[in-house]
Picture (cartoon, one colour):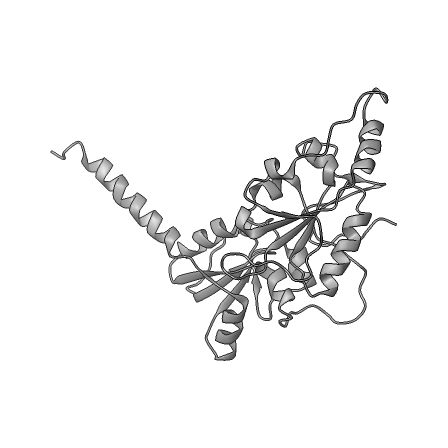
Length: 275
């Protein structure tokens, strides 16, 4: 007769194996991946972003396996694999990497900073050359709350007087006192915060460029100007908080993603600015 503690022991073993699988996922910098590819190291590159974003540009030779379908996708034993998302907090890269690492014959590393860091390093991509419509990166309130603090740098571009006027226009009683600006230090504790666009991107503890998040009053014009400065300096790892102070004041609740006459789609990395 089996002892009563045997099933529990098996659970402990299985849990240990699961933890080992999760721990087997490493990380590699953009420079390391470039060097290994140049040396002829056989790496399979997997882009975890949505197909529309993959089509706009990806690492040369990368295949597209969106993060949401990694568990269901059947893959051959690919050997050494480098996975990456956009680097803007949209994809759950860690979960997708762990799922792929659990498949037989696959060893997984994540690309630090994702595709935006690859772009910022001026590394080769499949994106076509030439003049293109201007687009900007956006991030939702929920995505920003999920992002890791060590990966982020918030730039506060809000203007109090604009926030007051806009807050009054949204209240039922125009004479009522508007709420003060959201305290970003309380809303996002342990995140680096500044009120000016950095000349050079700050670095994460691993050396990858931090994700610069631009927060304005919700009108986008100030954030667009700041984003242009970042892109001109070669920093593509940035995002504009969708709705700015408006979405912060409502904690991301419905109604904060409408800007002007357009409704932004947070599932895409670049959205044309309002005309």
